[in-house]
Length: 125
Image (cartoon, rainbow, N blue to C red; front, top):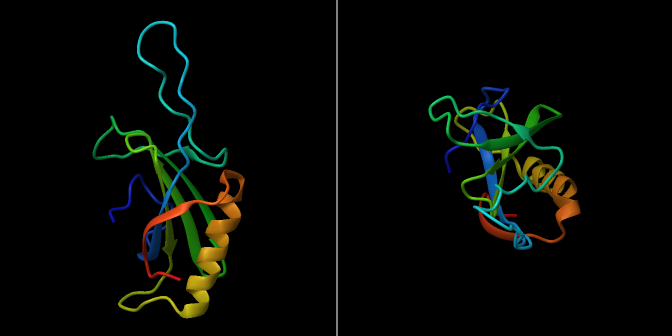
């Protein structure tokens, strides 16, 4: 899964998860096209994609003990929210404990959205 936007850290992605967001209510418009969707979480901030300035990507990064949680939402695919585990693990996989911490952090940050369906993950819990 390609990472979108620019991350504050250059650590590689050791684990990731894609979550299906609930369907938003239909926008009510009187004339013209509906407005673009709002990011699903208030913590998400605009994160430009240097290779394609037309893309509208929003992200959030949180430092943990020797790893970083990164949440990413792309306005072009508003039904998915991605999370990345970034750590200085070059050529190795995260430990079972690190994966558990990552999943717990993702659940804590996405709790306001309710239960979300997993679309894909590496590694799975």
